[in-house]
Length: 200
Image 1 (tube, one colour):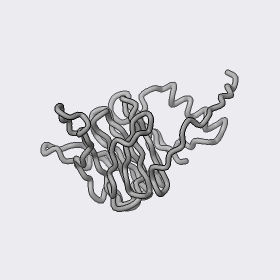
Image 2: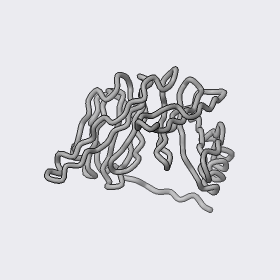
Image 3: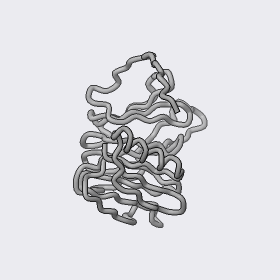
Image 4: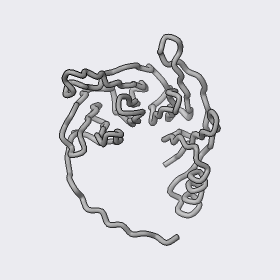
């Protein structure tokens, strides 16, 4: 397979944050979310019109945002807290449909929490500079509790949840060919789902 050269042109430049933008993601609707070292969360429509701003969403740098669906996302921070956010639907005035803080997992890790993702069943997986991966599940009171701790030899920077063996093989080829991704460990978690731990 040959290399395809694609030239992209800058469509628009915006400066919504006053510090490093560390993670962005896109909702199924096309709306965009960004988190920053300025501790804020910002949400825009596809034309980058501001829809919502959540200042001081965490007490320290926000490292990562992961979207579960149109109504839920999760963030993690150097403050070691994991926070889930939920949109409350008001049918009378759709413009008032804003995200609010839903749940907080306090002191999730010993050191900086670097990445967080949802699993397909609603569990949360987080990773950290403390060399651990933690899996959290909701208890009967709908609060998150620690389910499993996986220990690694090095800091764990990011997580991917995959269930396609072809993708796994492709990642390994990329590592061997280009050296741009180092797969530290592959964990089997639940049926046909893999957690890929990646060091950048």
